[in-house]
Image 1 (cartoon, one colour):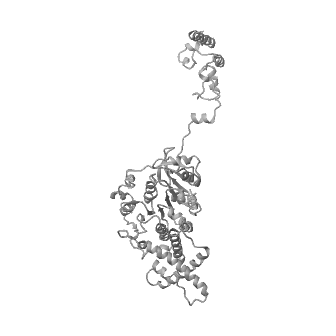
Image 2 (cartoon, rainbow, N blue to C red; image 1 turned 30 degrees about the vertical axis):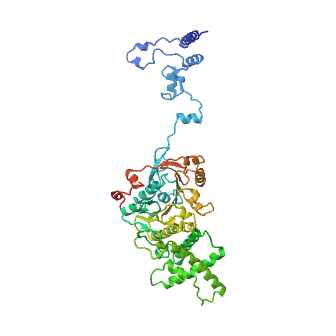
Image 3 (spheres, helix red, strand yellow; image 1 turned 45 degrees about the vertical axis):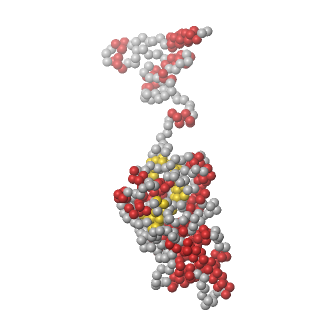
Length: 524
């Protein structure tokens, strides 16, 4: 049989079926001839039995209009069924079984924004195309609290956009809020000074600039024994805590050695005795310096009867050991620590910048300056209730990757009570030794912004540490510049695109300083 003959047979079958489907029509009512009344009557040509027509259509392999799935645009109730039998409406459709995947396609969900509107707009959620807003201190102060730790971790390869993100969302935007300020340990060099130097000047302050020995220019000095720096802990204990951190850092960075438990005990006692003696001698005079302390270490009062000759010798040797470390520190970084603290720095301003861009990255000087800045700021804000401070540590592995992490942990509870958010900027998680207490500091931070991680092991580290979805590992390796994965407390991770205004682009331009009139929007 040819195709043309088969087609003709199908057409004939359809015609026969149509003749069978069309049931005999009832005689028209006489009311159809009455004016006005006929408007309320059903159509003259109607099928007497809807169910019969459906059966004939099904037998013919066709569908009646009312059998097609979809919403029935008619009222519910017994009147609907009655009118349907008289030709006005089709019968109610009973619905059909479906699958979850099919329902997802035919009933697309409306995605909500991943965050509320509290805090600061950081960027745009790439999934919902809505604003992503978050501020750690605002979330911590919320009732109930949005998170339990205001500390922040920012990870990302060079050129991934983490510096612009930090400058805009963690430094400049918070300054626009009432009783908010920022302290920045700025390492990125821009024309011989840190990238935040010009911004600091435009806001009416001067950066606290440190220079290594032999560098040209006028650098600032920070005295680690200055009571103003260590007053966060009352009495001699605050100064001893700062000195212990500096000694451990210098010894660890210069020789890689660590004192044994027995040696540490004698050194601790030798430092305590020398510090008490020195402070007593300078009580009514100038503030003692590290050079004064170094000269006093190793000297043991021969008239003390509570020590045997052997014990006095052990104290003498322990004091000399610490003195050698401090002398090495002063000889290497004398321009930073040798002398009284410079008076030019203003910690009461909205933005305070510690310019460490000209200091070497491979020594102990950067973590010591960071540790001093941390204690200095804690002591300063202790007397100012209501203020909140973002403390940003660029190359934060200096602060939490070595002995100075103990300082952060010991002051953690006090930091939260004083409204301080410690923000650590790093390239990758492998900068922190696995056995270091710094890993704990990272895990306790409940705000993490993770930018591109080019190596799989670094992306996998971030996925494990911040409890991200396993598929996020590949996402981290392919993130574009200005995109990050934001992980806030127990919320699911969100990919955020950093959107900058023209002013922010100018502010974060690596080739230009901030324009003078741009700072007017911030106030003082």
